[in-house]
Structures are given as structure tokens and as C-alpha cells.
Length: 228
Image (cartoon, rainbow, N blue to C red; front, side, top):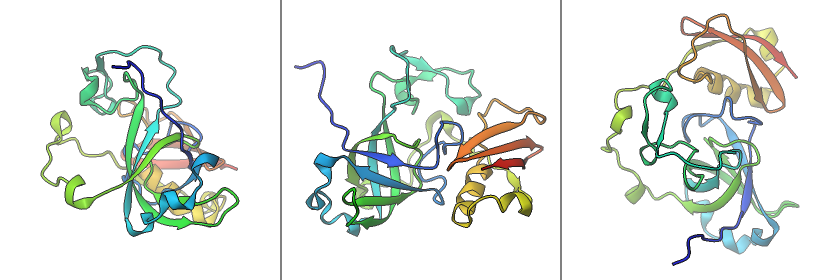
């Protein structure tokens, strides 16, 4: 049996996240975030997407292209556990794995069939950086892919951290109107690592060509500056 398997990058996704900081922690958490999937020239055949518009959600199989680690470890430190406890890599969604492959479920917003780049998929709820290579696209099937009674393992009982967002109107005015809802939703999920809780530290997050500066104190995220 071969020890390696050839893979092809079929597309790249385009999102507002130029860096890892601020990317939603899981797919579907921030449905306000919109993205575009642009196929590579060999895969721009509309026939390859025939019938896809009938599905409401898709699976994306993708490559953690920004991971620079050359080796892997059998255990990792999940951020949700404070960055201290170690768990088995195959019991986590850490990018530091033998094969740095990600899996995300996204909502299909529509298909733009006739563009200079061929058919383009418009999706919501992606948790990927801008330019992430896509290895495959598959339909999400509710009758087999949904498991409402699934157990959450060591993450059971750990609710997602959210904060109230204080962004004065004069600062929000610097954000294009069609980007405001998504930005506020991303901020509400508190982009900081779980183990960081410094109320005076000013954090910076790149989003859609903007630099968002904020602090977090007592459950409230305060936007202090938006640089365009």
C-alpha cells in the first residue's frame, strides 16, 4: 500500500480573515460571515456543480495551509481547556495533526454561474482564513450527517464564550454597511484565546481590510478604534 496519497487543490475560499486571529472557532458559529469559493481552472466546469443548488449546506474539506509545524505530537493543548490540559490529537480539531486537513459545514447561499472565474459558490458560516485551499466539496445530508444526541466528550458543559459588544456609532460608521452585521457577530464571540483575560490589553484583529482594535472587560468588548 502507498504511504502517500496525491491530492489536488480544487478551489480557494475568500473570506474577510487575513490572519488566524478572529476566525470563528468552529464552522456555523457565525452565520453572518459570508465567503466565496472560487475553483481552480481545471475544475471550473459547471457540470461539476450540477444539482448543488438544491442543497442548503455543504461540507468543505480543506488544508491547514498556514501550519508550519513539520512534525506531529500524539497530544495537543486545546484552547477551550485553557491551553494547559493535554488531549489526544485525534480527540481534538487541532490543526497540528499528521495530515493537516480541516472539515467545515457551511450554508450554501447561492451559486453564481457566469463569472470570469467560472461558477462561484457563495457560502455562510465558514471558519477559514482568506485563501485557504479547498480539497473537496460535498453535500451535507441532514438525514445521515445530523446527530442531535451526539456526546461532546471533554467539551461537554463548556459553553461558547460570548460578550456584549460596545461599538460607538461614530466608529461603526467607518465599516461598510454590508460588513457591519458580520463584524459585530464575530466580535460577540470574543476572538481572544480562552486563556487570555487582560482587561487593559488592546487587541487587534484584521477583518476585510480593516484593523479592529478592542479591549474586553467584565464581559463587554469595547471597540476603541477601527482603522480602514
